[in-house]
Image (cartoon, rainbow, N blue to C red; front, side, top):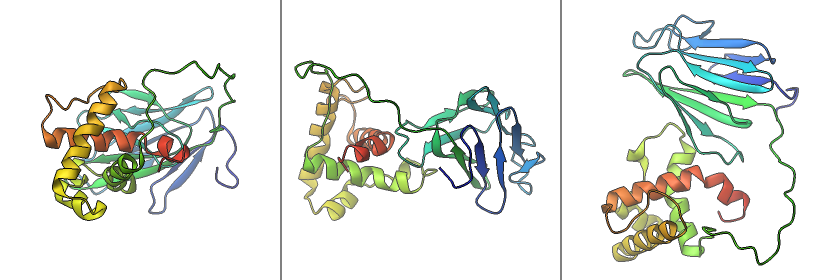
Length: 232
């Protein structure tokens, strides 16, 4: 939490000079002609686009646009999957640090958000040691290296598209593996995740690029969770 930011507040920072701290009950609208100007010289930006507001302790983002979507990405140990906020949609903001990224045909924009709330839930009650959870997945060393290599470009640039996912030849160079080993590890890891109940993975029907993209998205969405467990 930033120094001087109180629990319950929201910080919105455009990284180029505008930074606003909101108290519960306040609201802020961004856009080309809004109080928090974003893309004021971009004719494709909505005049009023994203609105940040609170209902009690919960901060919410609402998309008042008609054609531009925004995506909320984690920037810290929040361990949440990215959130897509389409036109007309509203989503609660996760606690801690995040980025909201959106784009017009002229420019990509990024706002940094801080929801100043505790990030640590209370410890769960102990369970019996033989109470195994179906679907528990702990990657081995080589799987960890592969997931980290796939996720890193997306984590470093929250607004990046899937074109930033390393190709097989890039993974060969990064990991020092042969092409056959890279493809074999991708296929085996997809089968492992499928067997552990993770949706969206199958080595039988998906083509090779689709499996690689699915692994990259999985690694990005679970990056901070895996990192907090010492996996990365």
